[in-house]
Length: 384
Image (cartoon, rainbow, N blue to C red; front, side, top):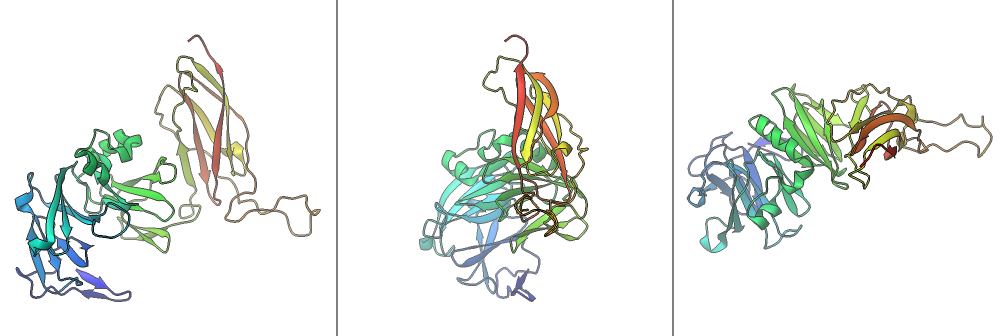
């Protein structure tokens, strides 16, 4: 355990603690009401510092007597009924088998200023780092899905499909079962409004499930073999399995084009009893050459294995040389590598079924592309 003052790492001093604390004994720390709280990899005790401190003498507090399921402390964090800090703040302790204990107060050593205010059961958490603040709530990665703490406290139970990850419920349940014991489960909220859930598939490979906090839409990122993430000065960094720290920025992946593959939700177009025949589709976007966008029709909830063979566009639009064209005849270019215009272009696409969709593939090499809309042309096909 070390403290960082902005330039130097200094070992923490836990002298005077009873029982004695040795370096490397703790795996986690959180702060609550002006104190630092530490816990170990195994056991039901936490240790707390003096008011206003984070080292020196620590005191032990064992929650074992109030646990009904047993287990070990997996994570500790604070939660409040609102998004601020005040008297309604609670210290939340979650065990590795899904028992949640809540405390209020500011001094665990004084029964007059420390009280257990709740006990709940939830799915097993995946990792010490598998939780994050999200507004006034806390989101936790569990074996059964990603859950809101407020849902656990309100319902005293969690449904088969936790509300937060309901749109990808089967997926996260399956990966929770497959990869629960792997190291590297972590989640965080970026300043860009992306909620990133890192799932280690093996000791050398990870995948990220990412939710747009504005729309609730989900995506997955691949080839980021991360075991830890951090946000610094609005940029995302991750540490990978090879010991490198990598920055997530720009419009390409270390010089390689970024491949995008999307399968929008299937749509009955307000007539579930009528078969449809998709005949064409188009994408409205800022892609400089819409002919390079791949469009493929699918029907009736097929989950295809899509290969992305799209060609990345060339350099972003830069306009013509100054003073070589007539004034007011050329469009001004925009900043940030986005083409000035929305582009479109119908392509022949074919699919038959009651519920239909069009998969989209494209590659991005040097510019930021905004996908605005998908247009689908279809005709009725066959009887109801």
